[in-house]
Length: 484
Image 1 (cartoon, rainbow, N blue to C red):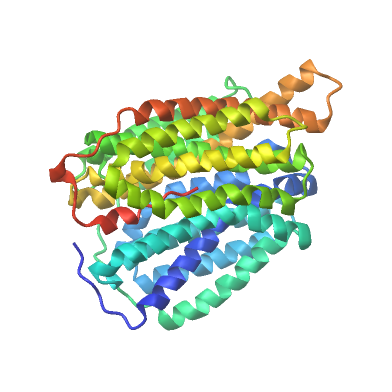
Image 2: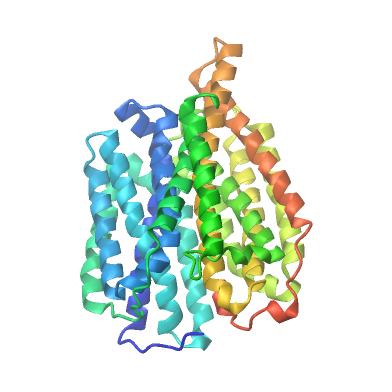
C-alpha cells in the first residue's frame, strides 16, 4: 500500500485532474447528439459517422494497458501537462475540421490525451491524500467520471441548438487552455520512474487485437459478414488477442497479469460490467438519433429528455454504494438486472415514430435505475475478490474490456440500426424517413434486450467473495466507478 506523498496543493491537483478527465469523458458522448448534423454536413452514412464514437472508445481501450508503462517512464508533471495539451490539440482539430477525416483525427487525438489523464488521475489521488480521506476523494472522482459521459448528450444538445456542434469543442479547448496554465503552476511529481523494459510485441499484439476486433464489428454496419472487410480484421484481431494472452502468461512481468481471471467473482463482475457497458453505449448512441430523427425534437430538447435518466444515475450512485456495504452485492445485482431488462423491454415494445416522449423518458429512467444497481456492485465485488497485489492488474483488465465493450456496443448498435432500416424500407416502400429510423432503432433494441437477458443470468451467480480475499482498503474499490 502506498503511503501519502506531501504536495503543496493536493486539492488543486485533484481538481485539475478531475476536470481534465471530465472534459475528456464528456467528449466521449458529446457528439452522439450531433451525429445527424455531422452526417448531413459531411455527407456520410451512420455506419461512417459512428466511428466518431467508436474510434474514441477504441483509442481509450488501446491506451489503458499501455498507460501503466507510461507512468513508470515519465514524470507526473509531463504526463498530466502532456495529456492536457494533447487533448487541447484534439479539441481544436475537431472544432476547425473542414472534412470528416480531420474530424475523426481530432477525436482520436483528444482520446489519446484522455487516455493518459484518467489512469494518472487515479494513481495520483491515491497517494496525495491520507488514507482516512481517500474514500471521500474517490467518491467525488467517481461522480465526476459518471457525470462526464452522462451529461454529454444533454449539454451538447443545448450547445448544438444555440451555437452549432463545433462550439462543443471550442468550449472544451478553452477549458483545456486554463487547465494547462494551472497544471504548469500546480502539478507536482509524485510517481516513481523505474523505466522498466517495454515489451513492444505485447503492445503491438494488443493494439492489433483490439483494433481488428472493433474495426471488423464496426464494418458490419456497411458490409455483410462474408465480406473480407468484416471477417478478415475480426479474424486477425482474435488471433492477435490469443497470442497476446499467451505472451502475458509466459512473461515474468506481463503488461497485464491475466491471472486475475482465475478468481471467479472477478471474472463474473468483469463480464457483468462488459454487458452493462454494451447496454449503456448502445443506448447512448441510439436514443439521440431516434429523438431527433424520428420524434423530430431539437438537439436541446432531446438532450433535456435524457437528463432525468442521467440524474437517476448520479443521485442513486452514492445510495447504492452505501447499500452495498449493508446488504452485499447479490440482492442489488439481481434486482438491478431485472429492472434493466424491464427498461429495455419497454423500449423494444414502444419505440415508433409516434411514441409519446414521456414513455421514452420513463423507460430511460428505469434503465439507468437498474444499471446503477448492477454496475457498482459488479465492479466493486469483482475487485474485492482479488488479493491486494492484483488490484492494479484487475483494474487494467476490467477497464480495458469496458472500453472494448463501449466500442463494440456502438458498432453493433449502428450495424443493427442499419439492418433494421433496410429491412423495414424493403417491406414498407412508402414509409417515411421517421418511420424507417424508428424501425431501425427498435430492431437494435431487440439486441440490447437480449444482452439484458444475459446480464440477468449472470446476476444469479453473484456471491460475496470469501472473507480472506476482502481487503480493508475500501477506498481502492471506490476508484473503479461505473462509466456510462
